[in-house]
Amino acid sequence: MKIYTKTGDKGKTSLIGGKRVSKADLRIETYGTIDELNSFIGLLRDQSIDLHIKNTLLTIQNNLFSIGTLLAIDPENKKLQSKDNPYTNLNISDNDISVLESEMDSFNENLPELAHFILPGGHPTVSICHICRTTCRKAERYCVAVNEQSNVSEHIIIYLNRLSDYFFVLARKLSHDLGVSEIKWEPKNK
Picture 1 (cartoon, rainbow, N blue to C red):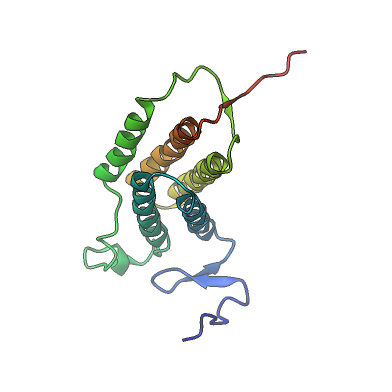
Picture 2 (tube, rainbow, N blue to C red):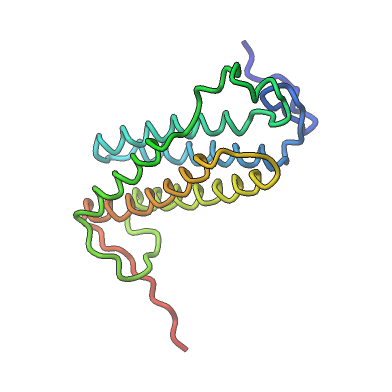
């Protein structure tokens, strides 16, 4: 099977359901950003980090693949909006959100109180966390914009919001674990 189809050579792609749209369509940009985030998480997972965190990141990657698939469904295709839709088992649940919150609570138990803004950096692994955080925020903004045009599950938007927080707290945890000082933002005084 060839990976190239040539069907996108004119700048169009298909949503699940067959509708052809511009590759610059907001929905395509949104699930493309989810894919970008997923790739950065893969890079983070490839670092020398705790196995529990690696497993959590793998779960997050699977959730993001489900989110990307849900965003790729043509919202105007009524057949795909029905209960018979083969993608109905793909969803983000309250439990998925709770897992992120529990992980952050666990990380925070051993971290110093946050008393200032932190600049990204200090260690390559920490920097990757911040890249994941900012890419996640971008994906969240795009999801909100798509939601203003057509319905996006509230759980997806909440999940992305918590996920960006998760990467911030994970960056702090990894800084702590690696013995790296957090870089405090020093506003320039006139």
